[in-house]
Image (tube, rainbow, N blue to C red; front, side, top):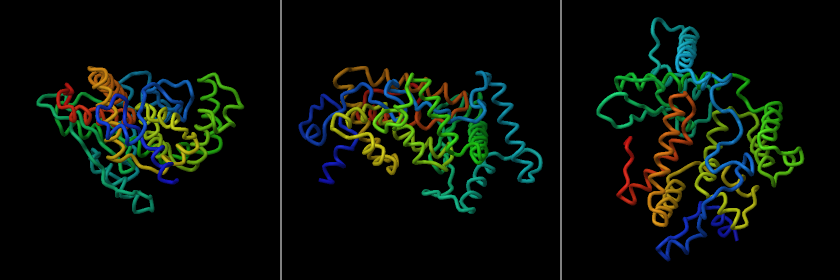
Length: 328
């Protein structure tokens, strides 16, 4: 009985699978959108209705890159003063030291305090670099970078800024924060108060998620929400509902499951199947995802959702062997 329940909660293999063996593993994803933890009317690619970027709107201050650069530099300078640094801060070292300090002070970092950098392959500028923090949050270089070293520093700056801000008490999920977020969700999606109190509705599930993570920081909550955003984008949540999985079952199961290679591979297989059914769909989704990733990166936003989408699509393209990203 338990194994059947777990099977129902797995990300589905997409429709139109030519292999009978694959079809027999689990019911397929049929596409479309399932009500995300945020709201029943959210489009398939929409994140939850909660601002999880830099506080105070600095993640995209009026869409002005100059203001964003100024804000980042201000935080870096403040960090230097706090740590009694002299002269120009080595932000790459500062970011690593910040997370090592957190680990020393008792932060639970499952994979250690290592900060990971990833350069986008290219033979000419501008160079782009992504940095992944120990918890899984991802940021990218947000400036025009003529060298790889500058791209690495740019990514480290925005990651350090978010890491520092994330320690502020205002970035913790509290009762007051939950109430404000739920009210914003109700207003955004024209909901009513009864929906917020009913865990079987999208907004009710969103409230349940917030309350289950009370005391956590915004970055920690965003890391959790990335899993649900991807399941929603991929159509897996809709497939789970068709298998008679309740929202509470899905939330309880995936709230404790990290995004891993098995989950990515299953989602990639869905896109392989979609490509077989509708040739060109993978290339279109990949192009759209790359645009979203670039826009979010240049705005200094947290990128893991967009980057995981791209990685899953590239994995599917690699399995097909005949679709290539222009940026890779």
